[in-house]
Length: 338
Image (cartoon, rainbow, N blue to C red; front, side, top):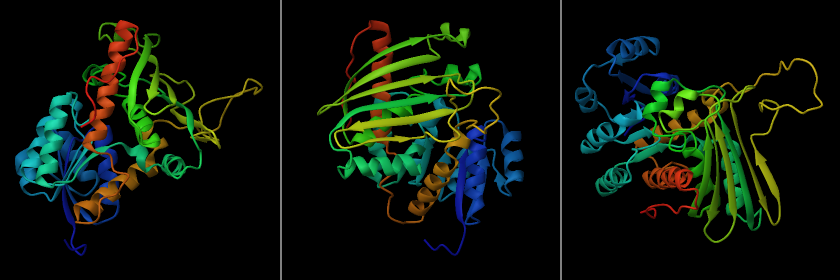
């Protein structure tokens, strides 16, 4: 496929994250973007903003596309990805692929058998710090990995409507962390022990969900990961990691914009902090979508790309964490990664 003409990309889902992707997709000038959303007015408004087109029929949009980016609500991913794979369209889907392990496997195998690129939006793979840490671990720079400590805390909780559809904090916010443990260490996780509480968003009690959670993971072959996640961090969006090994100890995400203060600090804190995921991972999102577009044009797949197997494994660990909170026990993933 020649780079001389614009790649026809269909964007399905024009909410907050869809708008971000639309801006990235059109920034290079190499994409002709068509937008779709269940709210037709929202698709039309976004198309006008990014100099694209709007289409109120998903199947017609897919029929005219050469690649598709799915950024709609989680529960709609299954049907939309299935339609894209039927047409053998290179497909990028925001995480998770689905909230069902069996269906995740079915869609993934369909993509594999059809030779169709299927990327899942684990943008942290493309963050410069996380990627460098991955490489340092892979080349033995840290020696034997003893412990992994990870922090993922929203500045403010999303709307309740979204929280109700996300599955749980383990399947939504912490899914990235479960994925990171596997991706960074190159190993599977043997099981999860998790606890949770509701402290900031009382409405989550009725949803059987939590806004403050912690999980301890056993890493196959040795090592422990300790993760915390929450829906409210008063100073800003906080994603950090520390990895301690036999040769070195490295951290990612600890800088002048980290939303944290020392107890010796006095007076108002006016330093700019990370506002949300779009701010913290802006460069990673751009690198990820640029790599997907290159693959959609026939280029070599990027080894950092999130796969359906990554989504499957992270979902299995999220489900194990949910069981652990209920049973107060160490829970293995219900099924091994395919």
